[in-house]
Amino acid sequence: MPRGKQNEKYTVEFKKQVIETMQEEHLGYRETAERFHIRHKRVQDWERIYLTEGPEGFSVERRGRGSKGRPKQLPKEVEEDLLAEVQRLRAENEYLKNLQALVLEEERRQRRKRR
Image (tube, rainbow, N blue to C red):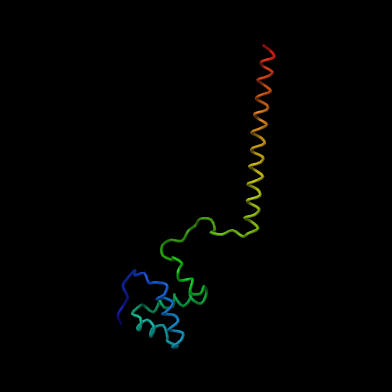
């Protein structure tokens, strides 16, 4: 069986065409792989993605190591709570800066009076 090129990147349209052809013509993984000259494991993976995420799942880059960073999207309630907390802390910080400026100004006045 001819094999596809190693590490070849297939288009979203091609992946969609492969899976839809397989479903419409009731083909197995191996038959589909032979028809499109790709590995049957790749067809299995694409079908899983298609069934779980739909055709738009093909546009997600899956190569390389996964990200261990923070989640891409926070729940709306959590995001609103965090924004409110940031606003509160900014206001508190501004208040403390103004208070410090007033205290320093009062100390300067006291020193001037002593002279």
